[in-house]
Image 1 (tube, rainbow, N blue to C red):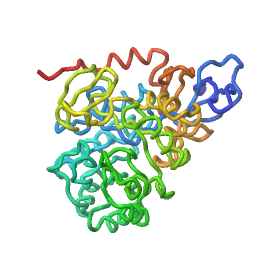
Image 2 (image 1 turned 90 degrees about the vertical axis):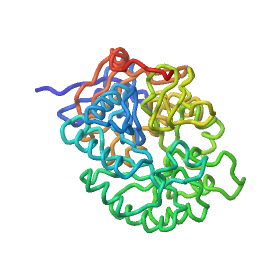
Image 3 (image 1 turned 180 degrees about the horizontal axis):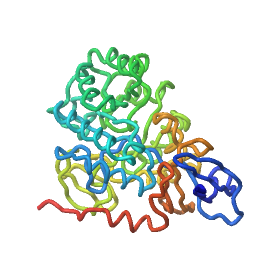
Image 4 (image 1 turned 180 degrees about the vertical axis):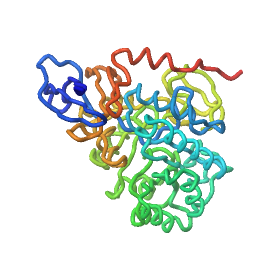
Length: 399
């Protein structure tokens, strides 16, 4: 049977390409016709997804079908690889949620391909107001290797990323133990000292989770955890470029300090993303409010409660906020993120057939998705937006 052919332009060179997909891989890339209009990229990779469009990974009622529907939503929005993220919760709930995600991967080929591992954000974050963010204080606890092993036993070794604050006693030993097991250890939601940040990198930490957020609103101007993470070249950093988490000047300065090669875009999307503006109850933050401009806050405050912005929009906003070119912004959400997902995020023969086709003009606020292929399977064509809208649940506001 003949392979699938996809035509579009290379964002880096503007040259027309003809991709041939055979099975789950890219078989060949050749010059395409001169009249190609759409752009081609590897599918987006999101290392931090809590939920979207009403599908909530942190809900106590999590079921395999929720994971499957979330994977479909991610694909409809251009994400071909995503990392389900579970925030701080009781040991029992984390174990139960991990079992559900493992079941979804075991029974659904789409989930098995799209989900390389699970990200546990917590429970060993800072217990202090501010850096703790929307994580529930009652379940914050010190890192314990025995608990990590229970996670792995419950999920068949599915936990591949853990975010913690390295201020805890014994954090260095915990980080070292996880890094030796091949787990990506991240620093986030922290009030750690610069010395503790560098010690975490010494022990094997390799990523800062949504740097610039999950910290005190006011920090010492020189001696603080943000400068230390920016300065340590052993740490990559993820950023939320939704226009709410980081002002333009901050994002520009942080990307320059960390360099584009060590920077990653994540959505940090919650189940409220894709719903209508209003008030909701969420496992992340409790009662939250989604404004018309997409800002998601703890109800009655100015504190953020995660993000409601999908990654394909964040790529577009990053270009404006940080004055990036199209290929630079795409790299932050494909090849750079792919270093933490088994080397995905590239278009070349032999690579996974995870492909995104889209339209974009410099005045656009987001990529206009026109086609997505996951492991060679076409998820949709130019009717993507109507298909995605049809899957969204009707929003329900609080009384």
